[in-house]
Length: 151
Image (cartoon, rainbow, N blue to C red; front, side, top):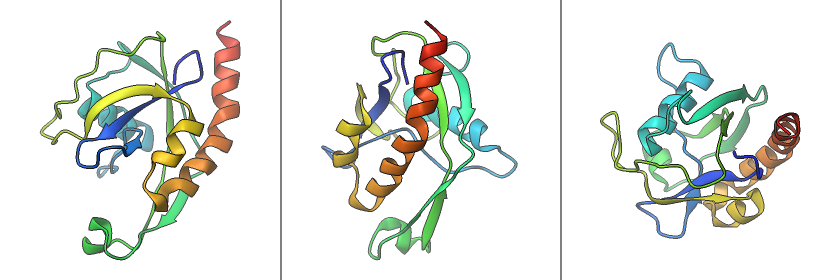
């Protein structure tokens, strides 16, 4: 997020019009915050502390059920529990991102932009909308507190 309380999101390269925050799995021996920082680099080329600073990994995790027929269900998943980490971007302009897919990963996004939760949630895949609505309730006061301290 930035000082305007906007979140950085990307349009999925495989699903035009569908936007999301950088995300990915937690590798063996990796803490959720470390995974968030790694995924942000792989998907957008951003690093700590050069581009972003770690604010907090949220204590609450948010579960969701995987609907039948999705690639996740075909891979054997029935649900996931998501961890979220808040990272602060120093500037308000769009950061200089690299969405080519770093660290051996394929590109996730075709473009990025700053957004609000209100703009993001309707563009999410349906089965994750409740997750992001819950995230908004948890994260907004923490984002507000962080931005207020910086004034």
